[in-house]
Length: 280
Ligand code: ADP
Ligand code: MG
Image (cartoon, rainbow, N blue to C red; front, side, top):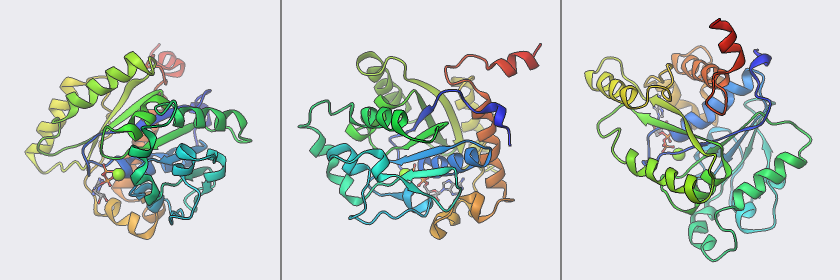
């Protein structure tokens, strides 16, 4: 446990990519779990109506459960919707339910419709008895109002990129949207981290994609790469993260490495003091 690399202020990280199936949810839950195992207290907010992050963390998300829907559209607080996880005593989840599927439309007519998650997160962090080191927000595969709420609530965006054909397709649209958010709603938002997922070292294609992404984003891309691994894809069907399911698997180790890198990076993009010291 590297308690020294816990952030002084809560880092709020939105995991986003409007493409489905690129590894957003897998990355959210396994990184969050890895950081909890390193000593951090971590909250995952499931903002996808499909509720895959809730499932992977073994958290109840039947329609009658108090969820992020009730936080965005009702009177519930994040604390009301918070659930512990069986994965780790320091890992918590605010689930999503299928009710959230209508939220994009229901939000349209509300006051401060883009700020609702931000307000809820700020209140929660201020009033909670616990100190949270990380909040991860798992986004749906769209750039609608739910994702806008996530961008407005966060300081950092983490973009998972699948090492496959068309990996970079849609990325300029995503970055363009983030620029709009920076301009109009959240000037301090920044793309802090890009993660290569589902990497298959045996294919030239994966290597080419990785090379291309690193050339475009030399500072954002993590050194750690998440391999394509059956253990990673099996874990959610047991309501587990890969760390609970098979802690020694290459997938679990890759997520631990990625977590260590993220923890070492300073939230504002400057070199962290320890790193600067180490470099002399
Ligand atoms: P998204 O949230 O972006 O839609 P998911 O995280 O749900 O993507 O991943 C899509 C599918 O790919 C899921 O079935 C998941 O289990 C699988 N998957 C994700 N990462 C890996 C990986 N590294 N190796 C193998 N399968 C993976
Ligand atoms: Mg998902």
